[in-house]
Image (cartoon, rainbow, N blue to C red; front, top):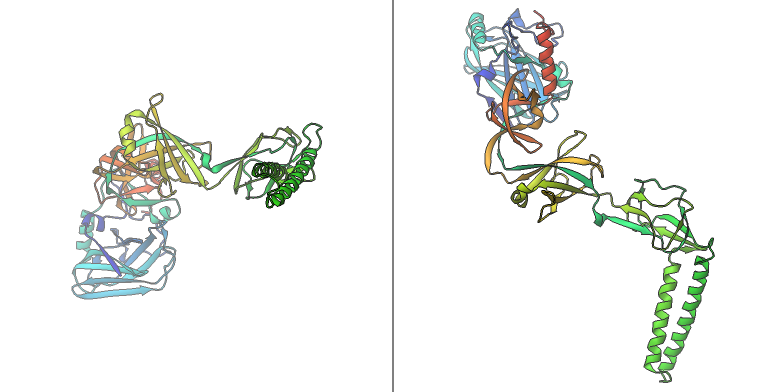
Length: 504
């Protein structure tokens, strides 16, 4: 069982209601209390938070006073998807002066929310712990001698930032939202380039006509992109409709020559045993037989009543069709190209000034032009195949191979961030945390799980997943990494109506 204690007083006791620019208190932050109010109708509410490997705790209660019943609302969020915990027994325990008050609830009162009632039995420094899903999340708190002392203490710790934005758990659970800690990461140089998604030549096979004639597509049509199996018949070529180089005539001639050459070779092979024919005559007979057999086998392969069939030698998909139904084709003409569907090639052109960095590249991140999730080279089972040893028009070609994925379509371009081994430590946040306004960059820093502060930052290098922060943040803080634009819109709505969403 894992236990985590939050020690920063400003985070533990920060008011869950944020202030607007005028400093007005907002103590009801939109939670549905099912018609029930906090015990004794205290105005001041203390917010407490903690994190484990799998859960986020956001608890709120009026300041604890000796022998006074308090309602504790505990919001639990799964860190895997930042959605509410919907089931499970939870036990809350308040310990102060060696005495405990505890309560166990079999299930949340609604998704993500457990409502406990605790009465402190002793005053002084206290520990409030919650056990859920085999994990214990613990925060430090205080039990006061009387209500007035507790309310004065809570007022001293209230959030007074003019940039603070309330964003309740109920709101965040209903949208694509998450927060992540600011990390100290080792970063290296990043080469940013556009890359063409293509199919590797090694994974392509051209289907060619082995005889002249009129081509027929199996099934009447063969659209590009259709999947095919190895050995599937894709075309047939009818050589009987033409007078010159008639396939049926060629087949009969080849079969006749083969049978004659075979009989002659077998005859001379028998005579050679009695030394009636010379060794040179026997070798010539064998040569004629092998040549006739090769021609006959070539025509017979795929031959069916005057038609030559063309099969796909590999499983994959049809990349291109070069003929139409009923078209006359010559022997050796390409009919179609079949590609394997499990490999892709990325062709990037990198400015020549990064030549030395390319040789030290240890990975890459790939961002499709449609703006979907950034993909890592490792996750795609990819690797760098080669890079040019000379520049053309100031650019060096760099080739990567990766596994095929539906997010990457051959013929389109992607944004690549080619990375080198980290050489320095830097403060970093997920790229999704950064918003831009008129050339300036901002993040929403977490004051508590339901309150965020708009903070200007100076950005550095980015690898497509993380962005270096040169100033404005420190390691250990948390920021909104997904859904920051929604918090911004919430802030804008609050600027229009400071009282929107709050009950006074």
